[in-house]
Amino acid sequence: MGDKPYAAEAATFGGAMNAINTSEVVKAAVRDYKREVLDKQVQDTRAMHQVVAMDDLMDDEELQKLHEERIARLKAEKEKRSQQAQKGHGTYTEISEGDFLETVTQTDMVVCHFFHREFERCKIMDKHLQTLAHKYFNTRFIKVSAPDSPFFTVKLAIKTLPCIIAFRNGVATGRITGFEGLGKDDFPTSLLEERLLGLEIIELPEREREDEDRTDGPGKNIRKSLAYKKTESDEDSDFD
Image 1 (cartoon, rainbow, N blue to C red):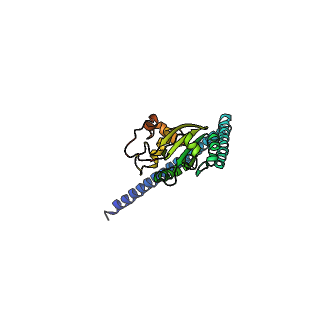
Image 2: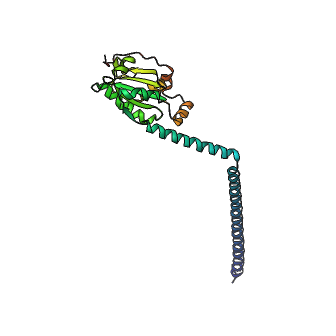
Image 3: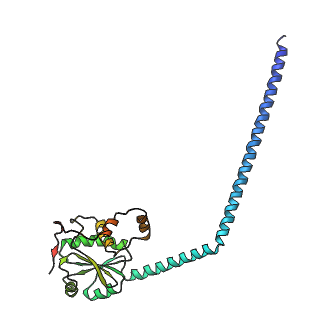
């Protein structure tokens, strides 16, 4: 009997605590809801500002001019590439002595390989030039049979094969005699690539050129100096 008052008080106390807990839960839920509403309002405001900013950009005359200029450059580049493709750019082809003069005088940059069909080193050079022809589209890559082109072989004083001559607008601006500066027969294509870059007869694609401007690319030292010493490995074939 004596415990009943205490039980009643405990029940009353428990009810009060439950009410307090329920009240706190409700308050927390209200706070969470208000936070969600505020966050959504902020996000909506940011999104609206972004839309407005983009609308402003779309109406910007300077931006529109830049866009039009870029489209014009792309169209011009596409047209130029199409014309170059018709002339044989992007391929490595053999031409006859009769076509030689027209080819080198009507093309801005030409890499011409004078070769002999029976010389093994000429075949090795062919393999590397074939690879580079696909990469450097602005340069025309051709090869001419030296025995079948006696006139130009004599005029250009070609005495050792393979022989690569660089032409710019019909003018011979440099050459690679044999495997000069390339090493032995198993040299990588990148070495020949560096030699041609040094002769300034091929140009790096724009993206690679930008990357190299930011860092010291592997070809910079070679392009700064075109002097090479002939070594014992330069056992090329004499051609008279």
